[in-house]
Image (cartoon, rainbow, N blue to C red; front, top):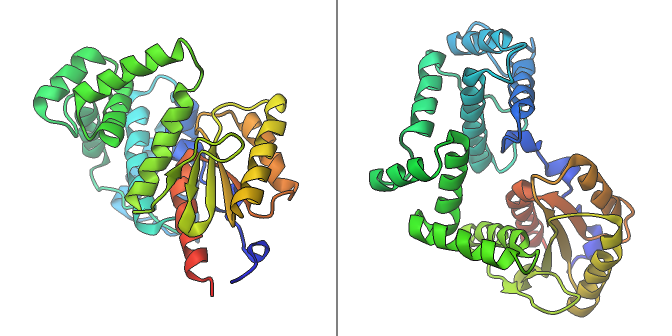
Length: 300
């Protein structure tokens, strides 16, 4: 078997995509996403046909948003459409780069944007009777879309189960700070289950939250970061390496973690104290797992 130190470990700098490709934190994320894509559309040597009707329409739309992103509803829904396309691209490609992988722009971009708005505010991915309930419970479209996504991912579209979970988490959060940690762990489990990867939940002090025996992979989840937490994390990683002979370790943080905090925690990875360690945002975990599978499949 190859020495794990010879592995070319996946890193956020090589497999990561900007958070705003996956989720919207504020209007600046819409602006950054649409303008990043526009920069590729405008490249002479890029993957787009500059005379294509859809490409031209996109270019003109972005130009019209120049100073109105913060209040422009059309920009909001166009960014939502782009994220949907990137999600599909990621599903098909595993990893992508906007300078190489082109999106297909519809000829009637206005109609497409209107369709996204209608779907987001009136109907969606759940039965009509549940959509009505969601509309009443979450009048704000962005919040309703988030609730729908969480309900589908974690509760198979069962609204009652989702609401019960929210109440339970609120109750638990009164006594502990672990609710958001458990949410992240559930997302990790979901990504593992999608790939039919068997794992164990570890409740041993000083070991990672999840353990994949077949790959000797430990997954540790952190939802916040501060200098005082560094020793605890290093201890957990060291113990997992020693006790379980880990070939791979990954620390997963929320997409919502600030860029400054993310760079602080990634300093541990850059120090190379752990040659098998990767530190990633949750949105990049799927790509990481696919890369680890490639590595493990290549072990002699």
